[in-house]
Image (tube, rainbow, N blue to C red; front, side, top):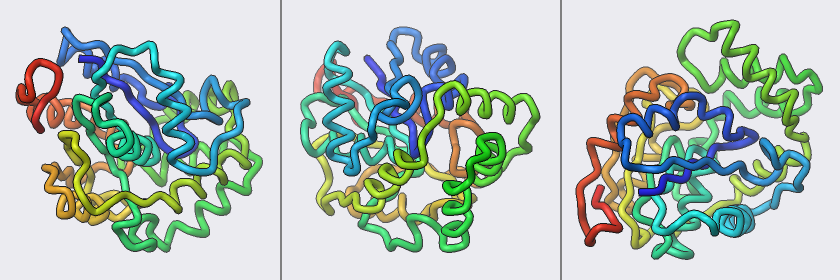
Length: 252
């Protein structure tokens, strides 16, 4: 199995932390790959597309060297890209795991809680990279933020600075993203925390209701589930995998 990990808004491969290694240890026969979205990480000089479909097309083209089918793990905006992929080219995929992802099936004030709207706008307007990363950590994580973690996130941003223009284009793409109410022809698993302070967890429940995909709820982690409890995420994925559809697909 080849896994492809896609991160969220203004985040990059480095923000997965140790998650990829933990997944590799849990499934030693699998290969784990990560891909930056255009405008982030090693691609920070690229202009981010302003639609999820364009981002998805870019990611597909950048990963043609990876043998199909892939297991996609998408978080937040990365999850939207995974959803769009599942509808556009389902034969590419063995399955999809979505973490804290929302779509237009949910209300706008659930997709980002109103209390955070002005806070996020203020963060985007700030030219202070260190302050912005500290605030993002405090908004997306519910665990104590240690100085070493904070320093590493600041270092990531300084090495690959995401422009405010690219963040706005990604926000615009996420806000406009719509997913069909019918289920894609791909097995899926939904993961979310009820304590997410950025996005209402009921967005995930709405997807589970519409598509019939199984969901697992965490009760203390923040929006960044792979930061707050990576072992729980790995356990949910590995515990849900069941051979199906022959050797190349699974049933979740």
